[in-house]
Amino acid sequence: SLRTVDLWLLTRGQREPLGDVSLAQLAETLRDTSRTLVDVMLVDARGAVFRIPTSTGLAHAEVAGRDFFELLNTPATEGLVLGLPLRLRAGGPLQLPLAMRLSAPAGELVIVMALIDLQRLGQLHQNFARGPAGAVAMLRGDGIGLSRTPELAGFAGRDLFAQNPERRADFIDKQGFFTTTGAVSDGVKRLGAYQTLEGFGVKLLVSQGESATLERHLQQRRLVLGMSSVISAAALAITFVLSRMQRAARLRDAALQATSNASPMGLFRCDLQGRVT
Image (cartoon, rainbow, N blue to C red; front, side, top):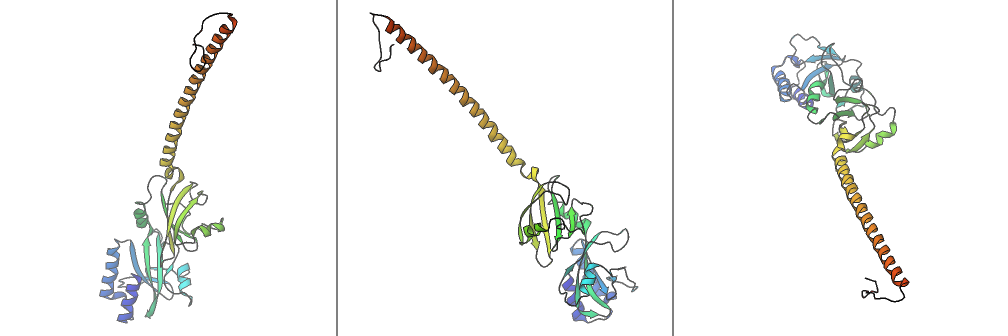
């Protein structure tokens, strides 16, 4: 959506586009297509934010001093820049800014910015956070937390690798699996997978509590252990009975043999193996 607006401004070459009807229609289409998940605004060189359209010419908010704005003011920065979650106005929704420098300034406007409503995004992520211990989180490429579902106070804007920098290596690939003790989140041991969103420098993490993830395996293991215990107990019982029967047979044979040895004369009967019967 940002590149679409940039291309429109580049091809139209208007110096005052904020009141243009066709640009307003384009911005409204982008909002409707995302079901108001994403809003698109323009920013001037001083950090003033303008809605599309703006008939009064007054700024909607200010982003001067924000991390993404300062980064885009650096000549070496190119492409999309993802900022930390912010509220444009007091009491407004928490939004995630994604911005890029315009290919050519449109008057004083130099940046086009998309704002992602994190509450709406969390509602979408809720579909993937299965069960009470399920969670979906987004991390910036530098390890800064952007959002989490269920919401966790202090997660957004925190460097999750500050205490354990060696864990960065676990997320170096574009996708993979991970485990965590939950020390930097809710304290729940988790198993999960992550996927890098190409072009945005964001990693999407989906996890489930370790106990919930292994519940089916643990149930099967308990069943196997239970059956093994029953079979083992039955085998021991049979072995005990056979042992007593063998002992009784040996005692009977010994008694018969002793009786035979004590008799100077007598008749006896034995089988082909020599056992007295």
